[in-house]
Image (cartoon, rainbow, N blue to C red; front, top):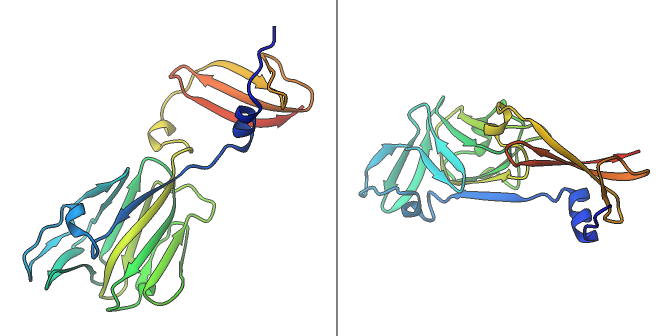
Length: 205
């Protein structure tokens, strides 16, 4: 006997709705929210900071400093900042402090371009899948903060190397009927794995 699902559920499966998550690193606007506490005139190497699933860190000597209670992230030639996430990073917005142009940043990951003006920039994934993005500076510059966007509906990097065993496949037609065999026409295929996760695909028979 065929079971019925709501049309809204079928539509959601067919569209595979995109769920964008955001992680903000407001170094200038709210350094205390990032655990950055410096006396006036003090500086420190950028610590590892995790916000909403995204980790920001440096593998060089990139510093955060406090100048009269104005916090900035300072990068010399060759310094970097690294963004890491368990899910694919889709976009990073960079806020410059005005000391130098954000065009001094470079990355081999995805598509980097300066937008709006010399003190704002946006990196996009250009259709690729990137769990780590590194910005490297070619001259001294300062930054106010970063906003990172990622897609948590996509496969986690933790799942990429995990073994997946299929335990069941269900076909759903556009009327909401389910079956163990494909329907004629459009099918939403729901595959269930041994670990309880599911994947969804749309096929036409």
